[in-house]
Length: 337
Image (cartoon, rainbow, N blue to C red):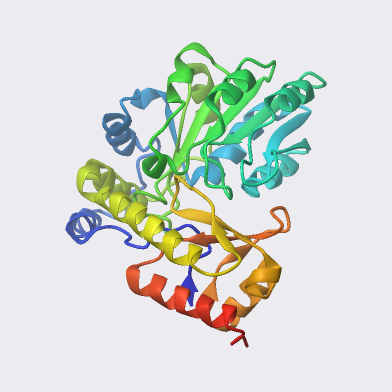
């Protein structure tokens, strides 16, 4: 199957870094438990981010960290306010902890802008956490800085900023942490660092928040092998993140090729995926049928009921993009399954 649906890094870990990582695993003594606090990995991430290692929490992917931070605050919260459409795990994490989910719709396509006033109003009605995807998935874009600023000035008791696509997008809100104990920034090594299969994420926050999370976190939550590989890849970020430039070039080339087809408008993106607006009358079928027909051709893309009229496409390798575009051309010519 051609995987253009999970926003993975199509290059994975670059060969020279992969060799170093595998040597690090080979040197492990697997009869010992891993570092309980992932100190070595936190120090590598501190060097990379410029953020103190003692103010980081390592998790089994950023999803794990979102669950953890909501669990730590569940007794003082009633609801989680989520601008939508966005990453579906936010709703699941809130519901797992018995919290009501308040969805605040984004403005209509193609802007998909944050309604900061509606978020602030919702926060004012009950003790709340707010989760913001920065940039947002599945829309692929940042919200206006002024809108995010307004949310940060709200009465929310916890504000989680998910920067899963930081390496591709390059803009961060980690500076908010210094003056605001409510703010937690979470990131993953799945995208720019190509480690989706390891499930490694990290959270940055003030010492009080971090200590609270460490006190309830399951010990040895990240294996010795995951820590060793992640540490080497982060220490070699300069080499590994060359894949980001390549992904950006592929993204723009892929968007240009799709835009040549009737009825398809790829929207701007700062991530490794983008939305494609589909005009059914011009292309010949609606986006949900496009996804179904692609699946029959062993090509996986996404359709979301929450984003009607659009498909989400992840970046692939050059030959994968060729295969996808050729299949899309066939569909536009009526050559479906």
